Length: 184
Image (cartoon, rainbow, N blue to C red; front, side, top):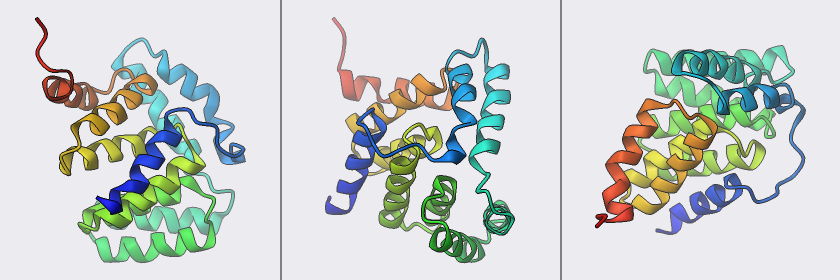
């Protein structure tokens, strides 16, 4: 339970508690995030999400962007050890780069290192409170560790940012009875 305490703190941050200044890397994504929240359909939402993720992946350094790409490429081919190596180097050199922490969280999760994954998600959300991928990751972890109320809250927050996410809609439907009980 103690190791998930930081995840709760991260979720509170993500739910609207004021944090430090938004980093420059997140500025171009603001308008895209507003458009994403108001997307007409899933197709438009997918296009906008790709653009948001592209903006979030810009560190401002070609070297750091290369470390992120190598880490993501290693995850794509299920080379978790190489991904951890690249992404740890990235976060060591760029501790304020939210997308680096998010990618590291994915690598930790794939390595079944839930505690470090939660810590990396917490760091992601501290740097970028609107990071729907990190919130979705927290939702999955909360669901996995049998914390349905926290999972439901995390998924609900994702849905407010990405209203056409069918996987999140399915997760909310799956958790609804557990969290809200039976309606009369």
